[in-house]
Length: 379
Image 1 (cartoon, rainbow, N blue to C red):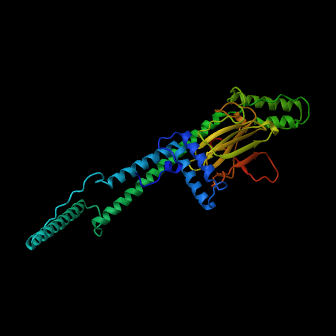
Image 2: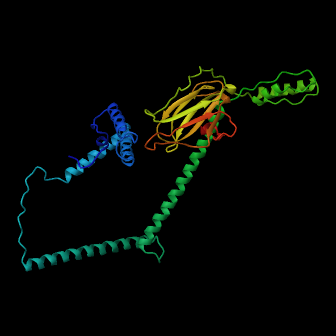
């Protein structure tokens, strides 16, 4: 029998137990050893709950469970090697008589001869190495062969680092340029020309706001002739340099909570509320800070709330917002706004309960959550 405990022993399940059995055993042990129900001391209950929680986390994850099974096999193999005579009869080793003094002397002389031969071979190898480097004449007269070898090794290492650094620098510049070109072509804005005004009046605030959204600004008019010439020149410039138009079809709006999460079981609570003003919808991305990889993205309609559970860890919240949905490839089109929360969110378990968060993406006075605008390639 093994003289070590495993996570299976802690949860009192077999090694081939399915996930459903492991979950049931975990719930039963939690009900027994919870500090509020355990008849012993609170410290003992906390200690047992920590062991149970650690075993459950290790066995419910397929990767960690596989590693644990390998660890068990290695421990059992070592235990088997340490008991080579188990189940076998011990054999008596015959006693050997001491050799006579003359034999001892001969044995000592032979060992001494062996040591002298080793020293002689070492001296011969060192002399050969020194002669070989001296014939090459690649060092200064004051340097010996050991110093030369160390210097050459350091020089080659520094040169290799230099070339690797330049290689990474060139690859990063090329990647940034390609990414910027892709971002510029992804969401081109449509340019519209303004109608010609015949009255001698300033443009209204509505027209000015509309022209700002399309990057075309109207200048003040003095008469219809000046306005007509200005509009004709702008139309001519537009015809000379056409700008690609974003013409992707609008997609049906997903339901709140639609996601592409890549985890199975979440335990820590997360609730996100959105504002109904402006009709802006949100596409939330949750990024694991330990490896920089997202664990899932969730869609939330304007003014609605989602309530989910995610795995334990430290995460960063990023989100894209807009009014019209064009699908996962284009999100909210050219008007997509990308943001992220300046704070990080740590979801943990203290032995009694799981800590979570409630986030309100609503502009509030004296709010405690700061957000920053980011680029599309940072989202």
